[in-house]
Image (tube, rainbow, N blue to C red; front, side):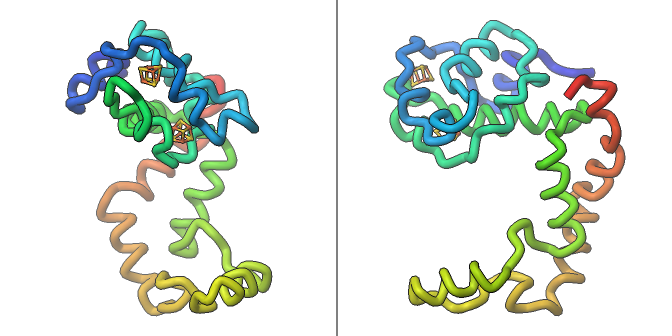
Length: 169
Ligand code: SF4
Ligand code: SF4
């Protein structure tokens, strides 16, 4: 059974109830400049126990933590967003693009493909051409896959497939 947002956050040791709606989070949010994400509104909806789980903006957060760093009330905004998002996924709600990313991680062990452009950018920055991931250590892919199965991630993605339509996302 889905928990109400306030109860869910409380169970995670988090709360949005001390928010004073100053808007610093929204003003700090890089994603909000390019998407409909309004962090202050997400916080308000959650503290009012509204159904934030179906709010697509929940998925527009890039978890950069700019808002959390600046919140004058010290609210763990991003940790709360992640907790709400996790509940949302258990309800079967995941945006198609995020489901694609999940599929990439399950199949290739990495969400960001490495291509010539990315390799060149890394070289120009003085970094190794390949990151310290399965791109560099392809033999580790089996272990990554085992971990994804052991944590229940693979099953979760499988079980929730197609539920977006039922859930309205
Ligand atoms: S910065 Fe903190 S107190 Fe201000 S609106 Fe955002 S969550 Fe609320
Ligand atoms: S962590 Fe998310 S909500 Fe906070 S500023 Fe970054 S993108 Fe915006």
